[in-house]
Image 1 (tube, rainbow, N blue to C red):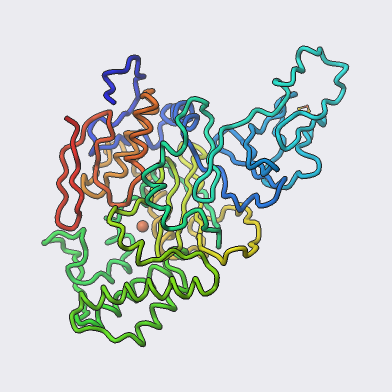
Image 2 (cartoon, rainbow, N blue to C red; image 1 turned 45 degrees about the horizontal axis):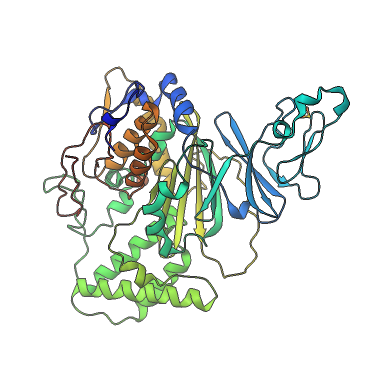
Length: 485
Ligand code: FES
Ligand SMILES: [Fe+2]
């Protein structure tokens, strides 16, 4: 586990030396970006597509990460992945998506052909080549490692990386009861955001920004319920609501409605129907805490019941509510799954250049078992300030270009992180340093398990690199962070 057992770790420029401070160059320095490409994106398991994108045999979709392109194709023998480069002179065989059931892939340059298994089935003018240059192993498509989770295909360019499940075990196990493998796309949208990919991710790793970035959500917190506010913070909300049972339920329903309107995907319109129906009919106990507890149980019950009546494989939401382990929402390196009432919003964040990022958002819901859904197609990116976005991502996106510019200020050296609630940012940033330095597979794997955690997470010891200070979380937060001996 200890990095001292290793030899020849590489020097990492702008590395995180204090877990609470993140050097700003990591977000725009071209050399750092190049190192990420060389040592990080070439080694991590990364989500290549959702499996509904390729429902039929022959369906394929292209996954692009920086200068690498991969074709993911459904064959008679499962889903496979191939490097998207013709073995003759390197042409990309296909771009976008399509179906090649009957013909396989045909190179648009000189017509070499490949079947779904990646085998070369035709080389035009074969007699004109030296036979030894056309050995089968050399002219078949080159496979890419592939594995599956959450109804998605994940690929890895590194033959020596540990199995995918070893990387994701805690989050995969935590989300399994949510039927994460059965979720399907309701809608999908994307934008090119003018900021570094890590900056884009970090906008969604903590709730500390709610007070200023999402004032409508903040205003809906009940008095004393803002766990971020200290006793003398001037913006601590003074709610006009009285703490009666009715007032608390009304506030709860309004809050869910704000989330539903503002985020789409996470709290679905059908969930709101249930909430409003119950609000009208449910007899509440006088004690407000008892009332909210009973209301949530009833809401979980009713959502589960109504969904199952339609043949939807809804898990028992009250059983899920009993799970004590905190919800994990971030899957290292670049995927978020935000579970709520049986649906999820999901994000995937990919670098385009050092200072531009492709940000995708999905609404994922459970559909009746066996219902045939249309094949989702990757959307054309829209502007990050496109008014069709719900309010919450619009607010989050609006910060990012300004933050990216601010990082360049000569006065600014490093980000300062809250050790209690901005720890996720520190944890995955230090894990990136592990990749850039060439830490052992075992260390990377274990750190990835630790890092794929929830939002508002504390800074944790990821097993290598600078050890964090001990964090004993305040009353609002329950985790006590262990510190390496
Ligand atoms: S590059 Fe593909 S057939 Fe020539
Ligand atoms: Fe936000």
